[in-house]
Image (cartoon, rainbow over all chains, first blue to last red; front, side):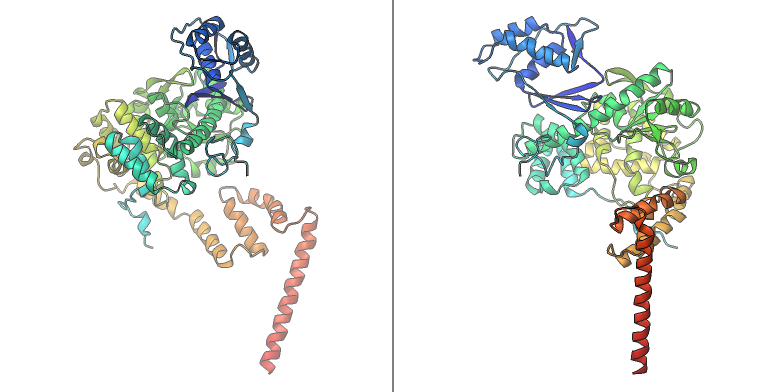
Length: 136
Length: 411
């Protein structure tokens, strides 16, 4: 089982997409809805098998293989030190995957200090919001 | 010497319409909140909102989401929410090791202000932006706590003890070089510094949760008192005409709604600390946002005039010290000459006013760098030559002016 690497990692789900901050390395991660589901479920104590099962039961048409994507995504979360093996066992029972959706992704924005120089009102793409900069 | 109108006691500066609508939309809820939000949305020029409004945006984003709002400003509010979440998270991860070290070494630290309220109300980091972490330690433990902070990379920003006493007599402002700050308080309030003044607050502390660990926080009554007094310091103590932050109103409203406030204890503490007038002043802001926040009878039990004791003397001294006279004199000179004046005296004035909180020597030492920048020179060694050329040019101009004057008088 796994847990969030706190207090180094601080995270929050904003409108269905998790935002993860690695304060020590100054990294910002944005997760898509399926990535957010996997991250939340794994951080709450679900096993990778539970998650694969929940995705299979959740239905919806997916153009990707959960049995391949879940271990790969978990590996990425562990490699980035966002999750770590849990010190205490906990178990979640309520796994509700999003219907359909793209394969889980973890987008990393490097150098947070640089990102924080982007004005969240005037310099960002209005539909995407901070930290996605406006193109012009 | 008369006191300017904005310094006069009792001069209450009402909240600006835009701020008031945002605060009502967040605090009031229901129909009144929705109405305030609609009015704000209709009247706001989002590209122009000031920093105080930007700080309120995350809470407004949450309140609007709870009310089911899905209009055009939602992504813009979300952008600010994400920004402040990130900024606050970075601060929190920088201060987490310090809290851990203080705990491990047995220093009894109490979380104050934003951190204390976040811990009490269990707010996510994005909801309550924080610029620094406020910690209260006993005065006797101050130097030990400073050593621990120093070992974690947080050093005092004041070069001398005199500067610290001038700027923050109630604590030490520390920074880690990456812009993260910890205000290490040895007294909870700027207005109330002295031995034993925080004994009551410390005895009444409760346990909250902060960064996944248990943390000591003041009881709701003390948190409310601190929010009120800190919130109105700018208009009451300094020469500001408006609160320098409005988050305290959200904190106060959250505390009142989230806990059963013992108003008797609250009033008695305010009186005992000599900040009864400040609290009354602050509660007027709360009432203007939501009249229901302050129960009937509370205002009447608080002083409606300031006791002209140490607070008045301290404030009068602070406002009219040499610092302010000097600052005003320099500002007047700068206003007269304008920013295009590159004479040595004016450049020095501009440099000095930026660094008035530094010692004269430190200011003098950094002056060549500033001068090089203003004169647009590539190297320090060019300074004497450039200064000499300017001096000769000036003497030449004076000579020309004198001969012109002589010629015109002869004519």
